[in-house]
Length: 161
Image (tube, rainbow, N blue to C red; front, side):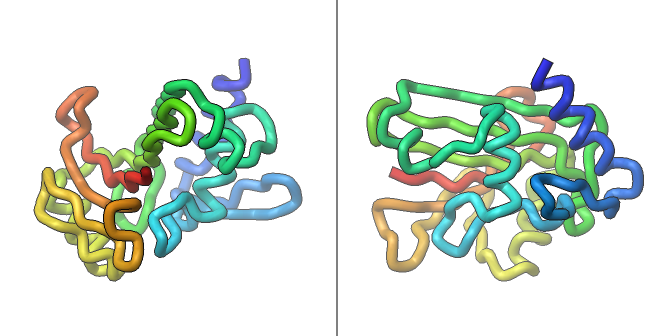
């Protein structure tokens, strides 16, 4: 049931792509969902993670004790995200402080997604490659790739170890 409510709430974003969605007294738009400069989920993405988990959660605790948890969320109707079509989210938490990653999934070509992200200052590497986040070498990286689930969507992923 939670997934249905979450999809209903996120799908309401799709109406104009700019309609705000209330959450815990705060309002955010799809364009606010992304990554912080250190390649962690920003506040907007954190709200999605919390909605997917059905509770307010502390990511640091989940990352410490999780046991290979994977979540996928596909939106019924993509929402406008800086001119791209944001269509889903992917979360993966490894076993006991193992790797974890966060992905935004787009219904646009990898070339289009890379161009928009690079215009926004992310300096994404060529498609299928990853680059280390400056100052977090060997710990955090970001990359872009066709989605392994269907090959028709594109993922931008932050990997953290």
